[in-house]
Length: 337
Ligand code: HEM
Image (tube, rainbow, N blue to C red; front, side, top):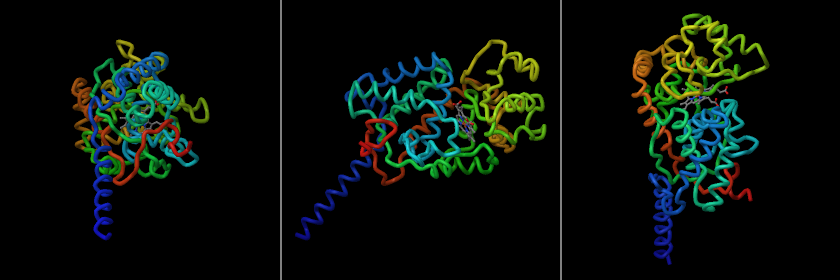
């Protein structure tokens, strides 16, 4: 009796380990047999949405970061709930949730119960980065992730970097997730697209001129005075040409590129024309500053390295021992039904 109980326990342990191991083994083409064509379905919806409004592309690129840095890439950021991650102040402005609902519905119609929300999010963010860069940013995304069952605002607050952080705090934050200073600088280049609320850079409006170009500070102050907490574009290039001509004429683009994902963030940063304190902080540390120069000088290198860093981000695992599932709807865990 004792022996069979012990044997059963051993089998249970082996099975548990097998499930955990299986869940962590990501594979390119994971759904080739179980849901053929799923990557095309995701891509079709993402491209359609970006054609209608490029802002959704920026939202998806931000989502991969905000999902993966908190409890791994488990779509915990997509869960609704009174105290879920998306309610955290650090997650201000997150968007594209409706698009992901739409994609999940289309994928469920095709192959019910097979594709996780976390894989859909990674495919969608990858396709968004690619579309926003005209294909210069790209990687084959391995899949096979499970959706998490836990989503807590406090975890998001604890794990995501704040725009008021010093360079030391930023370095420490990325190091905790096993990202180097170089990778932090590479990933920050995502701020070439999208925007931010004035409340996310309020202190920059009174920062000294060593930290922010006074003409740009004036432009931001004017924009922020227009409402309680308006959103301002991250990249000066995306401003109204008249506003650029009046504030920083040298930054009037020769070819008009709107919401385009490239290395322009590094040029802006060196000119002190970036919104967030955390962007400027990259110039205050030798190694980080060196990489800002490196990527300002070499756009092709940034495209490649950004693709690699997004891929690395997409592999951040669930916390050890946590359970996963394939959600029916991305906003709720299944036992909700
Ligand atoms: C280095 C630390 C980072 C800090 C402190 C930071 C902070 C912020 C803040 C405060 C906003 C504006 C939120 C708002 O007010 O609405 C923002 C926007 C954004 N961030 Fe970051 N971020 C960081 C790194 C990243 C990374 C690693 C990525 C992606 C790889 C990313 C992608 C984006 C994008 C695309 C937007 C614009 C989103 C939109 O327009 O919908 N950020 N970030």
